[in-house]
Length: 136
Image (cartoon, rainbow, N blue to C red; front, side, top):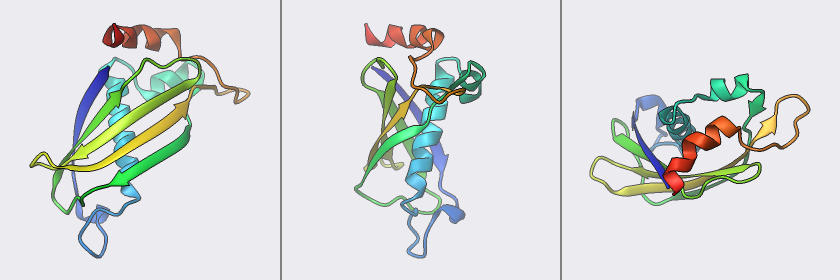
């Protein structure tokens, strides 16, 4: 299993009239967590795109348990529970507040696709090699 954690400070523009983080921003938090998780293994989305691979989101699920509020420091815990096979990768996210209370959970499925032709493809071998050590 591969797990990373990323902290984000909630600024005023992320909140709604009720003083809580607007629900649409949680997908952004998942993306920040994914980007940092990929960086943790030595790549960036930009590196993967340079290989001719894109990773569109094809499915997203989110569960809201408690609100995040202005000036909270949240932790986005991003997990790959299984080594991706074929063309699909699923990132699991959990978002916690500073007190450690679970605020939100989400699952985001992406496909590896060839940028030219938009056809599904395997995960790049270099990326797979970096991840395999977490799934012994």
